[in-house]
Image (cartoon, rainbow, N blue to C red; front, side):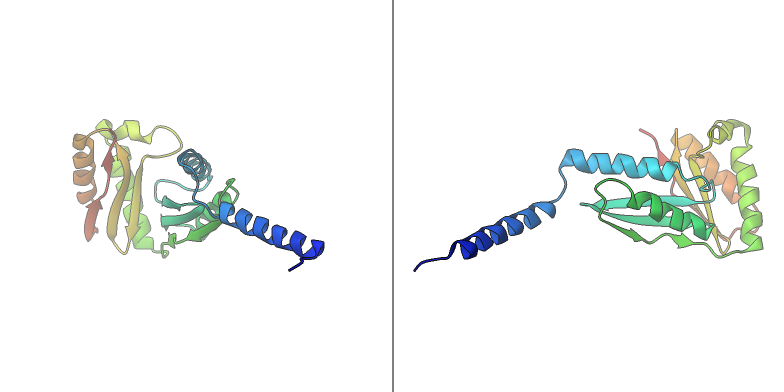
Length: 179
């Protein structure tokens, strides 16, 4: 059986293309995944209008990013997606960030919680800087506290301060203690 040179060249090209396609869908190395995580964290920290009442988290699955959390402004959701899409190596972004419904009652609770937590003398150090480490998420009078604090004592004190605000149905304290 004799093959024509053109057919042989096409077969080699097809084999090379298949091998390239398999390489392109290999999971990232541990080093590459850490770089992607670091870059995504940086991009999310740089968002200008994300504050103490917004919480954005993410998961990395290979070259795909899933955005999670809750935000007060719809533009914060789209800004987060746009920023993460531009990270080198990211192929797909699944934006599951929830935009909280507007509510004057929730806005009042947010302000009261902010004062109760960030203006309490023992906790004032958390108010320093532009990125507040304690995130106050209010939806329908229910409060979730997210973020990182220095100690179990701070976590418990923040929970007590949050529960002291009137008009709240429940407080879920998801604060993590830094190691």
